[in-house]
Amino acid sequence: MESSLLNEMVEAFKCLPGVGARTAQRMSFHLLERDREAGLRLASAMQQAIDKIGHCQLCRTLTEHEFCKICSNTGRDSSKLCIVESPSDVIALEQATDYRGHYFVLMGKLSPLDGVGPEQLGLDLLENRFETGEIKELILATNPTIEGEVTAHYIHQLAGKHDISATRIAHGVPIGGELDYVDSGTLSHAFDGRRAY
Image (cartoon, rainbow, N blue to C red):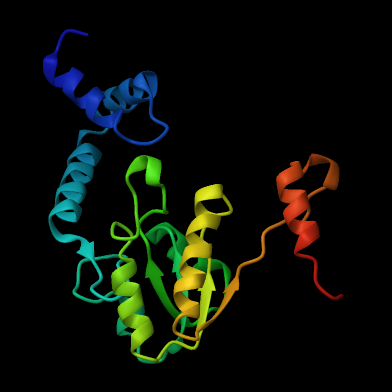
């Protein structure tokens, strides 16, 4: 490639997850050759989002306000708190369930090898919420990875110190899935977590 600006654009797109050199190049050429107006809208939207979006002071999800819409909604059940790893998990649960409690977003999971400890996940803020006595049920909705399970266990113990009951979301065989296509770890977890029918 000849243009250094084009190289910079391709390199910029490569920062996105799952975008390699070829995809970044195709995206760059598409915007430059076919839709410069969309490129300008994209650049403007990204600039504004990066400048104005921060974290909710209560749940830590992404918002452009001091408190997000969920935390600001007085109609939600403040005695229930669902723990998730990322803001995208909040959106997924909001779209797929009828849960009407509050959330706490960890922005990651415990991973000592990567330098992620309780401080980086805001667990001191979470414990402050436990101390208010308002939370009666904690729903642990971290991902079913080793780090996610360790994080859930750590938070469960933290909640236990404050006599808060904790539940863990179920993991297992997806609806419509066939047992012989399900990996052994998922199948084992589903079998161990079976419930009355």
